Length: 292
Image (cartoon, rainbow, N blue to C red):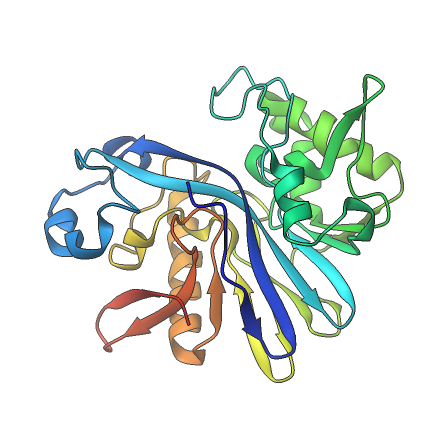
């Protein structure tokens, strides 16, 4: 795994990636509608950063985006966290990664973080919200405001969300109880000048993408609208993790169309490699271009 990340510029802001871990999933597990023809079509760029040598597993990344903008240090999503009990998946269970060291290597101390922007409240997007201190889960970024979608909080704080209630209890509830959270309603909208939440539901009930503007340029942090760049070529494929595949597809198509039309810089949460790029279209089909 490459632990270094390019520094991207969006207007006067800089964006870097802090990786927690990389893993792989079988192509047919990740996408229930998987068609191996896509590998023949896209092999030139798929291997080896995004597809294993045996061509049976897609490679995925879990990471945080760090943006420095207008004197603020902003994190978008916080990966999975260390030492957390996750019996439903070995990918997330009792991790011991050097995430905080990697964050420090990128020039960020936890107390220096001003904003933590959360696209949704799944296990691999909220884990480092908290860390264990004296046998208690406490906010990792004590001086930050944690900004999250109201619909996500309402869902996971009710019996409907109880299947993985432990994620809410150890990674979300402590920051709420510390009085550090702000919420974005279901219509999305502007949180602060230049920071806008865009509703992109389907993967989860209140999923949002986050658009940030700086000096006339814009970045879109898409969250789990997609999990792998192959979805630019197969936009109707929703991952096995999507709660409502039909709605997820509509949100993904909106992101693809919006990004292609505007040329906005796109930052993804699970693409391997650089994880950042742009969406192109020839009027009939979309394509993904890594880098800017």
